[in-house]
Length: 339
Length: 291
Ligand SMILES: Cc1cc2nc3c(=O)[nH]c(=O)nc-3n(C[C@H](O)[C@H](O)[C@H](O)COP(=O)(O)OP(=O)(O)OC[C@H]3O[C@@H](n4cnc5c(N)ncnc54)[C@H](O)[C@@H]3O)c2cc1C
Ligand SMILES: Cc1cc2nc3c(=O)[nH]c(=O)nc-3n(C[C@H](O)[C@H](O)[C@H](O)COP(=O)(O)OP(=O)(O)OC[C@H]3O[C@@H](n4cnc5c(N)ncnc54)[C@H](O)[C@@H]3O)c2cc1C
Image (cartoon, rainbow over all chains, first blue to last red; front, side, top):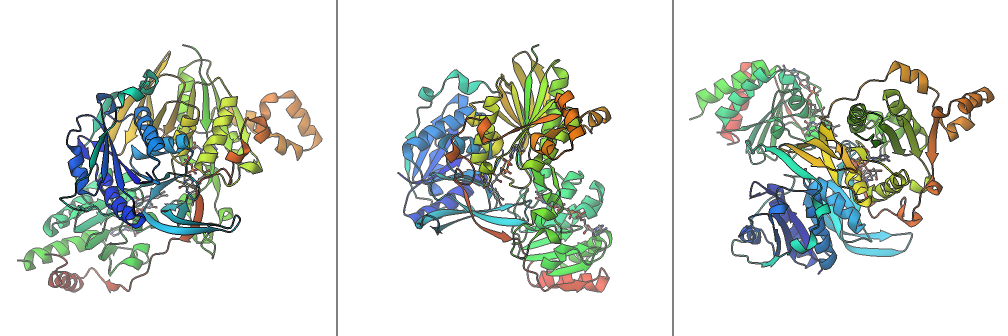
């Protein structure tokens, strides 16, 4: 009772990265709160999935395994979760801020009449004193999220209602195996007894999901391009530099919107959050929403024709110049001087 | 096919996309007065899909519903100029301070009062709160199925609508019966512009409160042309538990708000000349950042 629950998302029989990130975070919160970490997985052909989740710290894994739970549909998934939450009374429920999590979590919050905080970038445990009622709350979940287009960061709490629900952005929390030998308990949910026809009025007719091709989240070096790169052809220059350095190519939203790079490569508030040891920003002005996704890079090099570009404020090296001139020189030097 | 009754949820928002220096107050809070109030961008996409549906199914009607202060009537006028038939402004001090749960409760109770309806459209997300929660929560409260992130109406038949959805890494086509709530993604078509005829027709559309401030001869116009009256509803016009509204009815509380500031670094300034680039690359190789 009153444990932390994580909704585990499945795509193509794989556990979504964001779910494992949530387990890692959930485990550390559970330790602080001296409670258990429980996971709920819904889908089909889930045999053995619990073993992977135990490693990441799950103490209890609830599995609902039924053909009708895959692909994801809002109504059956929310029905199973609301039923489980009503019985188990979690204190915290965490979802990925993905197209699934952001579709599902509000539905659950509404049914349970509890608070939900969107797109958190950080979760902490803290207390709160309410002057009006002279009430002190302990062990609340501080849900920290950007709002107002990324211009502010708000700390949100739900003092009275439970569970305290939050969706969390992919990539902002670290993913770590808790203990290879950790074992938990498997609990099977009999979903069949919950469903009726009305839960299936929405039907999936067609699906085209692209496999993840790039992994900028895990890259040690990132060469990122912005609108200043100018064209898709010019982006080749960035790929060339990335290739010699063993780096991945990232992009700003303006570059993605202009069609210079794929959406998967977008870094920032509405893209991926990255923490490479080296970030080379090429023709990126560095608006707040972009910086939100790369500010934890260990070292930043900015190549920009505008000396006053905001990205330069957080750069370790500022090269004031054209990328078309600068990048070939970097490639040339590296090729000549590395072993 | 039977005509549809369509409702579009639209919110007036501060334009957070162009936040200048004056938009942040010294204490780190947002100075809303410095930001233009606009039609939430994805609600315009929602309006466009709703208008397309109205065009496809003869005899259908489209009502815009917005909750907000008096000036949010602007959103309704904008909708009328682009092809909406009616508008309702839901306005009451008691709604102030609502989080998404309290907002969706107020909207759902209003929509319930507007029965019967077939499709409710909302934007995916508003650019101030940025939560994308209100659409699904309204759907839950009305016990409606939901289709989120719509980008195209693929087909509509007598009791079925096919929608293409935009997902994180792909697309999906789903079908649903009516009634249904659909949230619309920015990848849907842009909203059609104002129609010159409609602009003339609705230029003087006003809410009761706005009419009160008008001169006598204006009142005559409203007597004769009832379409110019924008409905204005308060808590008294809907069936609600007042405890579930506004700040008091909101389970989430904002504990703290901080302005986003990034620590400026001391940076080395370089030019694209060979000696600078060579020096930089040498340093990076020597300290094992690269290589
Ligand atoms: C809610 C919200 C969420 C957002 N989320 C994101 C996000 O996740 N990620 C993101 O990146 N953005 C995001 N944005 C958009 C963000 O505000 C900026 O619009 C965007 O980051 C700008 O991209 P840019 O720097 O590539 O383009 P610009 O701002 O146009 O900058 C181009 C830069 O290139 C330089 N330049 C031009 N030519 C050259 C040349 N030949 N050589 C070198 N430099 C050159 C220019 O001096 C300029 O600094 C978001 C915005 C909002 C409102
Ligand atoms: C800094 C900050 C952080 C916040 N964080 C949270 C949070 O984490 N959780 C939470 O519950 N609340 C939060 N809120 C409160 C929330 O912004 C308000 O409840 C707001 O009224 C609705 O949420 P939204 O702007 O995110 O709308 P969204 O849910 O993003 O809006 C989706 C769609 O719903 C429709 N819609 C929304 N509001 C209206 C309206 N008034 N009239 C008509 N249609 C509408 C529109 O079609 C819109 O496109 C926060 C507010 C602030 C200022």
